[in-house]
Structures are given as C-alpha cells and as structure tokens.
Image 1 (cartoon, rainbow, N blue to C red):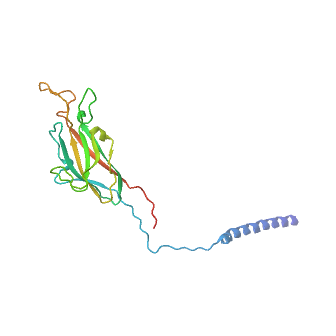
Image 2: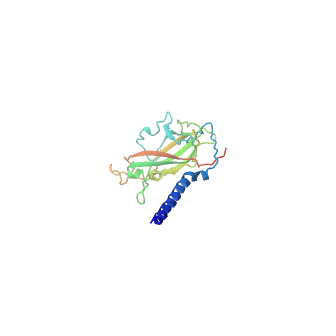
Length: 222
C-alpha cells in the first residue's frame, strides 16, 4: 500500500513539475522573440488640403441676364443676353456643358414634324475674351467671338450640350452671349383664328444649368 501511495505521489509530483514548467515557459517565452526597434517622425506636421470646384453665374451689366422676361417675339427676332460664368474654385475645370429645362408651349420647344412646319426657339451660346459690346452685340477681341454651342432648338438642350472649348482654369471666367431666336415661320391666321400648332401667343419657362467637371487627376513628384 505504501508503494502504491509512493507511486501516486510521484505521478502528481511529475504533473505539477510539468505544469509549473509550462507556466514559466509562457511567462518567459515572449522574451525569446524580443527585437530591437527604432523610429523617426517629421518635426512639423505635413498639411494636406483638398481643392474646391465651384461654378458661379452672374449677369453682365447692363444686361440683366436671365432675370428679365423676353416678350412679343416675332419670327426672325433674336434677343441676346449676357452673363459671366466663373470657375471660382481652386481647381481647374473641364467638360463644360449647358442644359436647358424648358416647360410651356410645345411648338416653341420642339420643331414640328411634317406636315406641321413650326420651328421652335433656338439658343446659341458664344464667348468673348473681352467684355461684350452689348449695344451692338459684338466682340472686340482680335480673335472675335467663339461659338461654344451652335444654334439648336430648345428640345436639344434637354440633353446637356458640350462647349466647343470646354476647359476653364481656376479663378478664370467666360463672358457669354446667350441668344434666343424665333426662326421664320410659315403660318396663316384666318379670320382672326390662329392656326393649329402655332407658335403665336405661346410662352416657355427656361432654366439654364451650366456644369463643369474637375480637371483630370494627376500624380506629381516633389
């Protein structure tokens, strides 16, 4: 019996020693993997700032831009209004477009399809490096006016139209002439009754939306 107890105690003693050894290994183990370490950092924090993309529009005095109603147009008439478009952000822009949301008389928005021959209002966008001479609607720059968007019916502008010169540097601007014209029509009013699908007495409300995109992203080295 004493021999059996001795063997049991010996077994427990072995287990206890193994357990203590494992604990010591866990405690001291990480020191085996200790490494040297060094680091450095910049004394002054580096500042990183994002740019801005902004597009603003204002009438070019004495023109009131889009702020005054155009009334009593006759076929063949054209009215020029003048606005300044400015990239007031810090980033260069590209992809300039103009869209027009038009509501009102359909014959003034979309050209008629045979046998209806009505012709809708047409819009043309031109630019001048110098301020426009509004009295005569002329551009005094030696290069003359640049047509950014050729004459097109209002319905065309439901899809934004790209400017022929579509980039605009930061803080730069465009002097724009926006022409609204009613083309010549072939209509006959009989005994005071206007023809069907006429442009006469019609009206539309127009909202112009100019859009620009940021310049192409770049990678620089310095």
